[in-house]
Image (tube, rainbow, N blue to C red):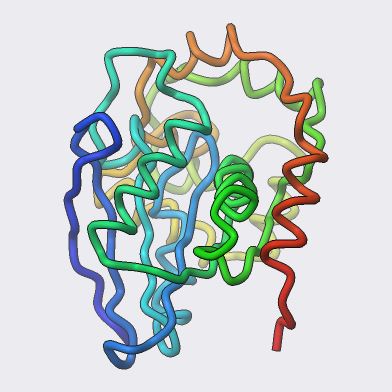
Length: 234
């Protein structure tokens, strides 16, 4: 199993950002980029990335304002175009000319824009928990909890989500769910809260979410990204 190394790099505007790199089986191994969701960070891929590194060089960044990447003093920079520019800086620094992408939620949006605007760069795109249309009710729910923190509880409580879908997932995952939550807290990626790990991210994200609107070009970007990155999956 490939071990990860820490990689620090300058974002599009010079902000100091962080990524983990799994070298893969050989220098010529294909490159895979894993992009996390809005209020999370690269630690989401801690279990998946080592498995993928058996065949790929895996890059797992913390998007600006999250995890070990620096916080941005300008909330207006917390938007997909800035994240895309940061990813381009990351890939350029690592001399990556062709990459497959796994994107969860916000990471999927970043992946779609990259595939649509950089078709020669993106070979494949896997979307998780995201599509070309963002549900308004879901966005309002995110706005409601983003940036809030609560009191501290032991890891067992943190790993027990209160919402029914979360409870069901935690029950099926068993110790894996609890272990992942505890590991994230131990490594400093998040803090203990009443119902779940509260991932460390910039509090200014909440202010940015209050002002951002719905994306009206989602379907157009999705169509471009689909045609650019459509490849056999086997």
